[in-house]
Length: 193
Image 1 (tube, one colour):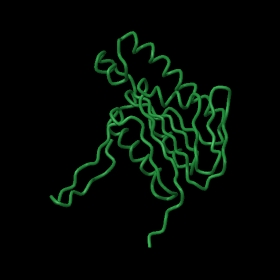
Image 2: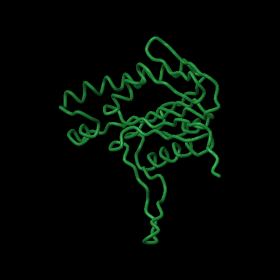
Image 3: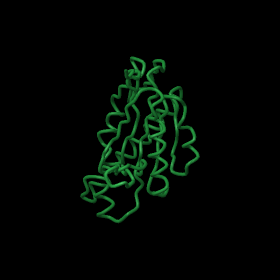
Image 4: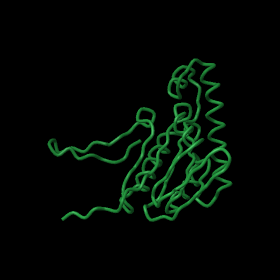
């Protein structure tokens, strides 16, 4: 994914700043409210959707912040977008993700592959990468708890997100599906003086 341009002052050049999600693994974007965390998420997603077809990239987005990811539902790559107050939808989406991971574990084992990239290289089959997008919002959001019998996602303190059970499993088993990108708020900006 192309994030933007980098100025190389010594040579008076600009080059694209690229990241490879399969090589980078999961990505967390940290910053105070208003520093552009969600904009960076959207930039990464837009870059990926211009490079990969919906047959090669599926996006699950969870917006626990400023409700800025709803427009992703217009992309053909987007499986679904859930907001913090949509507990049933969140549960359903996590079930879909976990089912995908379990199915791929079996598929990869049958093909003697340890991860998504090796499966594609070995079999030459098309299989969409699954991108799990979490926008936890700014540090001033109120406490939000979503729980069912398989996973818990909660914010015990404003701006802090804790992941347990199946969300942790989805992160650990990302090699079967794709990558997780998300935002984590920090404390308010320190003044420079």
